[in-house]
Length: 125
Image (cartoon, rainbow, N blue to C red; front, side, top):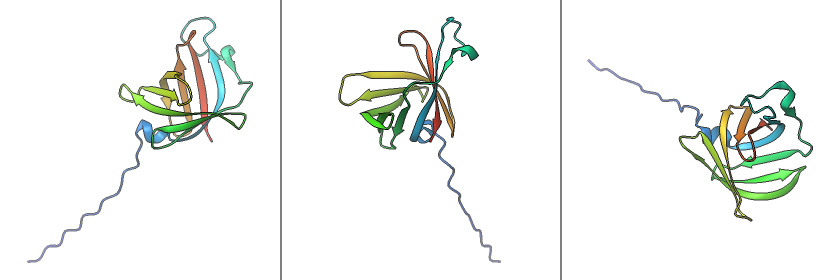
């Protein structure tokens, strides 16, 4: 008796934080925790005066733009199991670290504790 077994494999979509982060993100809101309660209250949302854009490449590099003009190149890495994003700007010694509050295919929320708590809400371009 002859038995033929066929095995097929499908490649699972890569939904790791690094692959989801890769691409272009436009800042839609800045939220300052004015009352210090650690919550993004409706009255704390501000539309940024300058349109910020972050481009994350798969190789851990990226670029920052304001109103379409290049502001600087950076290296990025995810730390602590992908919970934090570190951005190191190439032209300066500036390193920023953000807690990734949420990261999905179309929306990213980064939290900063620098100079008080604030959040930056980005949408994918």
